[in-house]
Length: 75
Image (cartoon, rainbow, N blue to C red):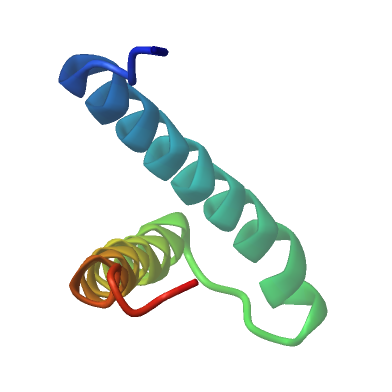
C-alpha cells in the first residue's frame, strides 16, 4: 500500500503553490496593467495580488469542502 504525503509536506506544497501564484500574479499585473492604461504603484499591485490570493485560497477551500461532502455521491 502506498503511503500518502505527510501533513508537513502537504502544507509546504500548498504554501509553495500559493507563493508562486502570488508572485506570478504580481508579475503579470506589472506587465499587463500598464498595457491596459492602469499604471498602479507597486503597493497597489501588492494589494490587488493579495486580495486575489486570499480569494483563491477561500475558493480552493470551499471547493475541497464541497467535494469532501459529496465524496460518497461522486463517481
